[in-house]
Length: 166
Picture 1 (cartoon, rainbow, N blue to C red):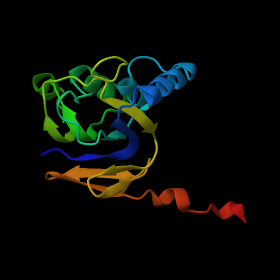
Picture 2: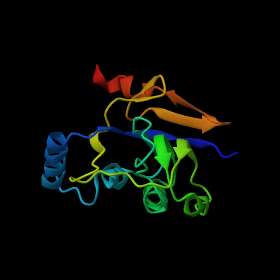
Picture 3: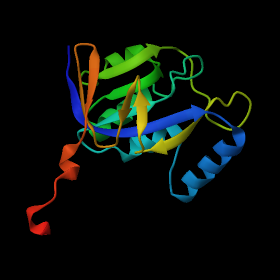
Picture 4: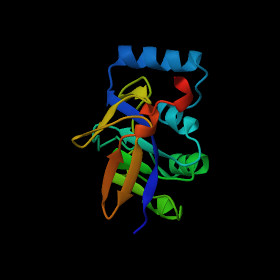
């Protein structure tokens, strides 16, 4: 029943390859990122943004958003998510009264994004073009979620030439 609206902060995951995962993790560490890769885009959110994430529909051992990450998303943005993947900790998520989420499914498992046995996904981009369903989503697009569906509206404001530019 709630409406989700805001600008998209995008993230994209891919199936894991240990060699690539190691480079991504090392690069993130050099860039000052802390925590797991699923926390990196969450830490970047600002008031009003919507976390829009392509986790390639990963289900079993794929939920990278539970009630702790959802709380961080809501604390940073005051908003919700559009997530092409599964989330967990449903009861904890329901306690976030204004956390509106559009997700593929729910699953009690936890994603495996640390090096070692079972590694299954790697964060491959933040604020890059992503795909949700059959639609390309660009960082900054306006997200409108309501009545069980989501629309992404191009951020045309970025293409307006200021009058004083001439």
